[in-house]
Image (cartoon, rainbow, N blue to C red; front, side, top):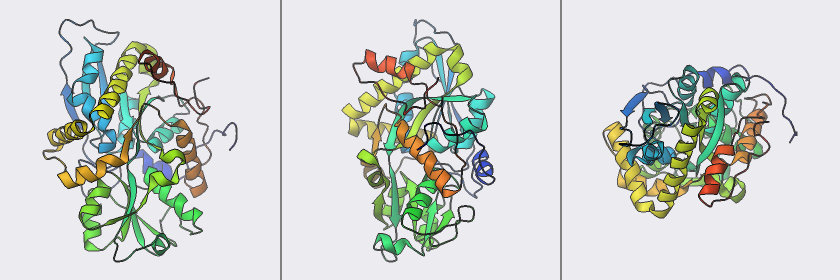
Length: 373
């Protein structure tokens, strides 16, 4: 791995794919990287009598996904607002990474939970000027689920149709890299080859599986568990492919402009994040129910209990952004032919998080050499 990756642009195709939400015929309340109308959850009431920080309000974004449960629970239980005191928190939901990045760029969102590839793309496209990754949130929660009547072994994935949520998204890159490591050739643009990669909105994936138009899917939770509920079998847990079974699936980003102007507000949100993750770990059953309550409030219906119970244990909530795995994921995209080597130096600023962790008696986290200069 080069000590310093050279500065580049995203290749034709990836830029188009990650600059716009996935073109699909249906929206989803729980899909990663899918098209949907972004929604506002509204302002929360500031803590009565509490001192206001340097901003009147902070606008927080997240996806209505289980892999964003830190944000779901922090919002639902008012844990972020408690740390913000007299500064008001307002929330928006996104179903596609590119639209969250656009909101950050336009100033309609200040802080957002997001997946690794949209953060990489947003950072590269702005030449390192629009965002910083300031905290971790979740690891894992991604699986290869297949029709057991068609696929019984990993070798039998060859020649089959496997869905991913979006061209060039985190799971798409992971599947392309895994196929390449097995010696299978796949054209990254069309998805055709020894494995046929079918880019499919997560809302549609269960119906596509039910109809037989796909043979399996490399997808995040809860889509993976929705497929299991339809009779699918987990053939591979992506965590098994990573050192220590950990890899970033969700982290926290902030507008550089907002971070420079309101570091105390960012610190308060990160303090709320750390305390929310501690509460999740101490109360896993209640946390699972709380996340589902928020999903119900946002979408009108909760996840079915069997889907929720199957999905929840595979997600680990963590303050560590797992920076080394972001670097590896970027290398996978380069190897797949979807990305030229990006200069990611400066994408992380973990100084505020480490200050919060020290106050909580927790160990510091590392930026894998990709921190601010």
